[in-house]
Amino acid sequence: MPAPAAKPPLSEDAAFRRDYAGYLAQRMGPMIHALMALALCAYLLAVVVRGLLGATPNELLWQLIPAPPMLLVVIAARQCHEPLTLRMLALLCVVLLQIGINLTGFGSAAGVRQPLPGLLLPVASSVIWFGRWDFLIAMALCALGPLPMLLHLGDGERTLQYSVYMAISVSLATVLRAFMARTLLEQFKLERLLRERAETDGLTGVLLRNRFLDLGRIALHETQQLRQPMAMLFLDADHFKRINDEYGHAAGDAALVALASRLRTQGRRRDLIGRIGGEEFAMLLPGVDLEQALVRAEQLRLAVAASHHPGGRLSASIGVAVCTPGCCDSVESLLARADLAMRQAKREGRDRVVTALASA
Image 1 (tube, rainbow, N blue to C red):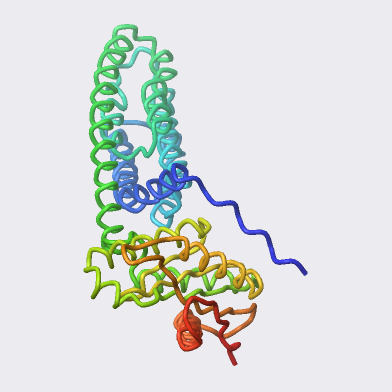
Image 2: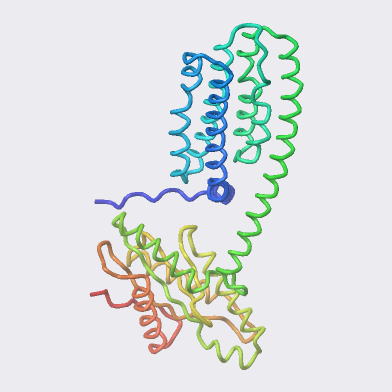
């Protein structure tokens, strides 16, 4: 049976947007839940105050209709970590508040003066909207939601006052949201940059050993679930100490940068590349079997051989190890087998590809 097809890789822009949405959900989730809970409490308090001011039980019952759904939304928001779902829950909370506002007005007699409804809602909720469309929809709901109630009450002066004050409130919300969105975006970029610097080798730009192993464990788990093979290439630059000793560390650094560049050129988007230590590099190839891995390794060897340093051309010894579907290899054991194969390549004369023995 053929292995399931891998999902097409995301573009860098799509991956950035996905990561940023996840970041916003993580950072703003608690704030969204807190504001929802506060809105529910404020709404219930308004019902209580209306009861104290003489509203009939029937009027209060109508006003309480949105409260149970709002409570469910608040509970769901606390458990939610998926960006799109969290955005929909926030918009649903605004819709329920607007329904409650209208039920309050329709339960009152025409001509009775009511407080201007929901003027603080745009400002209070301005910082929780992830995207531009969320914000625009929310502001439209806040501004237009109470209009049926105001028109029902038949007070043109109050409707005009409401329109002016709501326009001011939405304008303030727009300024706050723009400032918060820019601040969060810059903070996300900075955190991402710091994380990349902590996880990648400063000279070659590939993953550091620990991060390579962490991501390798995730990739191995995913390929095992899909019943796919996985290959590990372990590459070591030949005669690297001689390059450093005879031509200086700058030449050695240039050789390492060239090796890393060849690895990246030969790699796919889903492949993982790491600097394991010194002049040793590893490449993890999800979904690649032994035959494909040997072809990839030979292509990499030839690409390295086309590179040069001040003393001549570069060469590399490459070990190949493969984990077949259902194997019990860990990433560490797969790396160790590829390392042993690379050392065998060194003993056999360098500048060659050697396959590791299959795991027990």
